[in-house]
Length: 260
Ligand code: NAD
Image (tube, rainbow, N blue to C red; front, side, top):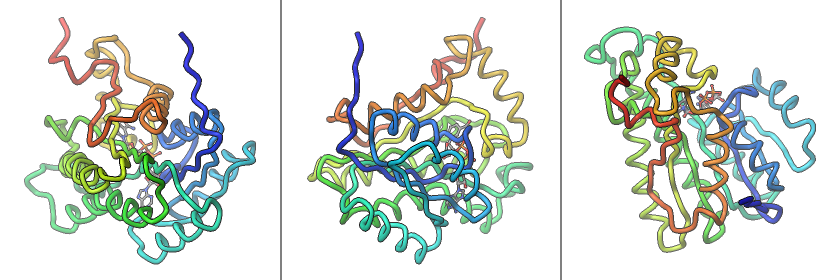
């Protein structure tokens, strides 16, 4: 069976693409393939060149710098969305950060500064982006973010980022409730380990990735393309009726204890 998704009448904002390995880019590729017009926001000027290169082959794109924790930059970003698109159908939040110091030692030693940074960047920015987007979102539009199973079980060294992901998943449910009347859907995708810049900053990620491949039901890790395809489902009309959910794409890693 082949299902083709037509997003040619849809507009999207993707926040958090650093390079071609970013999960945000894997999602954007699916949106672009389906014909959507896509705006991108990136955190700082050093990422501009990479995003310019990635989007160069696509006519229906634009890019704008915006640190998701900076209120003025977020206001300017959504003013740009309004100017370019008028309305918005799709919002992708693919942003996370915790200081390395918070992921090296014990969770017990998390400082208030590191706690605030991790939770603000990795969870609150979804709430902020949704609020900025609200006046532009069409009824029936769809919001997706990215989470990780360390929200549910202890993953060594993930520490405060596990707490931030738990907050993101809870925020997904509360946002889904607030937007429910307009049938605006809010979901988060729980992806298995993937080799990205953010992942490389997690101490011991290489071992985690290899163990993931061994223990997953499929005997391999899920791929960024599979994340993109799940996002396409959730962000298109295929996913109507699904909201407030944490949906896994991890090749069956989270269901296993240790494989025989
Ligand atoms: P990535 O490094 O490619 O993307 C993370 C993005 O967050 C970068 O573009 C970075 O610039 C952006 N960012 C950080 N702080 C920001 C800020 N203040 N304002 C704006 N942007 C900011 O890595 P990725 O793995 O693609 O991460 C994307 C999402 O996927 C994250 O939420 C991450 O936790 C999640 N995730 C990743 C994995 C994995 O193994 N790679 C697994 C599950 C979930």
